[in-house]
Image 1 (cartoon, rainbow, N blue to C red):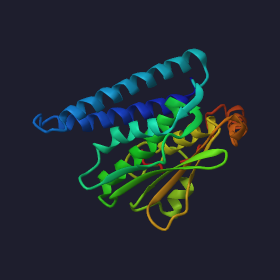
Image 2 (image 1 turned 120 degrees about the vertical axis):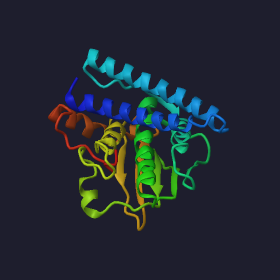
Image 3 (image 1 turned 30 degrees about the vertical axis):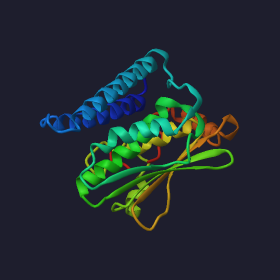
Image 4 (image 1 turned 180 degrees about the horizontal axis):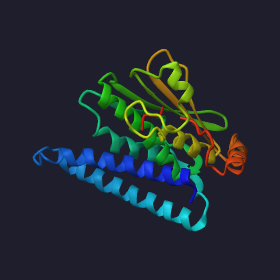
Length: 243
């Protein structure tokens, strides 16, 4: 397995385990009515960690990213991630999803989960560490050939100097490894989509576009060329660099 691919898997597994640690902290108070929900979230995230470990092992054996694209309702993995992240947010911070209903795309289910977990995990870290973020909003907008997943917050935003480096792993605003956004963009691209930072007057907004079908794979060729040119290692992969 290439070093970058290994780093990506370990990054996402580490983030999942750090979230589980936050769940465990709340179990110090078993009388809390949220305890049963916390246990359920812990079990769900542990299952995801096991799936990521299996994916990493498969990549070691086969030497290529494990990806199984199919038609899926993207609102389901987004709701799953919301459920896992919401309970780690400080009091008073909200995480909402706005969608008109089931929204189908062509993508790998685990990749979509990892994209959303990285983006929302980053926003949650900003909320916990700065206290300057009160609202995280996920909005789904369907276009002719793609679905846009817009993740926005009202936090401190990204200074211009940081935006310029945002999709290069290795720098973090909040003490992480800085690979979260790079991983999210690569996963979007290998599913024929894109990830970009939008220009907004306040906070930070990330836009993930996922194709409705294979005919809308706008950057799949770009991804393959990058993979061949850099062997995935050493490629400048885009991203907030928070985790």
